[in-house]
Length: 494
Image 1: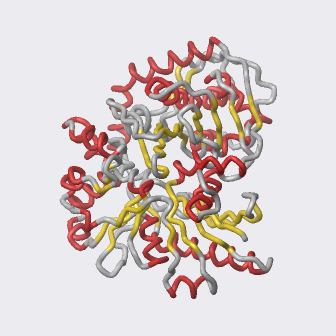
Image 2 (image 1 turned 90 degrees about the vertical axis):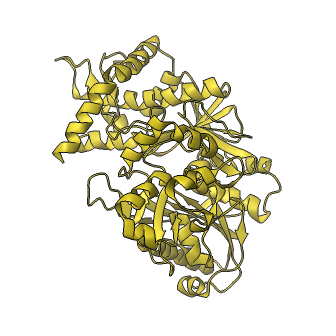
Image 3 (image 1 turned 90 degrees about the horizontal axis):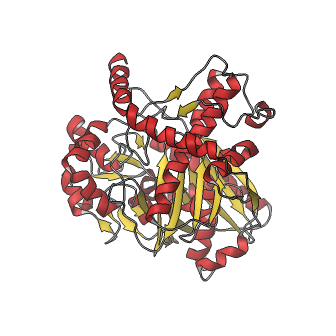
């Protein structure tokens, strides 16, 4: 028997076929196109995403059929924050509005100021930020009145997908808990949040546990993909929560760090962790498993910006292979796109501080990577303060291709970094959740048998990084007003 995990990402939709031992046998991909026709708008075509998913399933079924085998289940991972307005016939009235879309920023600023934002956060676990679908619906209500009036439902891209698969709008507790509208304590849509946007629960998908299994598929879906045998569909969870599961992060003393396009630090606990200052998220992985942490906006995309600015830099390790300066006195604030945790401030901006005429391109590159690591450390420290001491750190994401980057992060955190050779962590997490949901394993502890031994990286901790990190923190506080003014000027010039 084979098993298929599908991860719907903002740039890539990926399908990974696993065997019964959790080993990858095939990887299938489709690229997604993001549309940005107006400043602050980030959208994708919903039906283009559905087509890509169906194509991957079709191809996977064919590949497994050639091997005279079958797929036992398909388990789904998806990006956390999205919203689509649909009419009574299920037609999209909007594009799929992505987490990175900032059109609703004025609403989040208002809710930070009036105290209602923190109240909703304490119920939902979703920080007050433009990523939240709650505030995007506010924008639609006030700025796209015809769409708001005609909308039968407001759904995530995964709920939109499952309507095409089974004929119902359903959403897993994990994606629901990242909407800003779902009460993570009662596991129901939050009445106080819904009152802010003037809708009731009938306008939203039906929330279900992440381990929910569907056996019946729509005939149109079966015909499209060529499915001629019973197949389980596991609704799954969000990519961030599944990345934790797929990185061996199942206890409160194990931290998981992801640096891909963006980044995150996450820890699993058996109850919701609510930060009184609203700096951390708490989302649902499964029953009695809550993933708490903070997501940073500026991860690998900052490195990509640097490479695009200086095209001759392609490989980090080779370019810095002879770089030995650990204290170049050049500080970088990596906020090229505002920031989420722990500041939740879309007006923060990037900056190099301390430039001298002897600083080279390599110094700037080193400081850029160091700044991203400092952003991770900022969240890491808060998690350790609020929860407990993190004994073990696993890491995943594109940055693990660079030994230089892993070792620098190890030195800055003063922690060993464990790297698992499991492939895509969100897809592997979806596989593990699928095994639990379908009865392939009896308990979450049984996931251990699928993990390979980790590679451990440990670099010497240097006091200069502590000094630089303190300057990093001070620089943010002292320049916050200047960055807000610059953000205003940038908005006016667009």
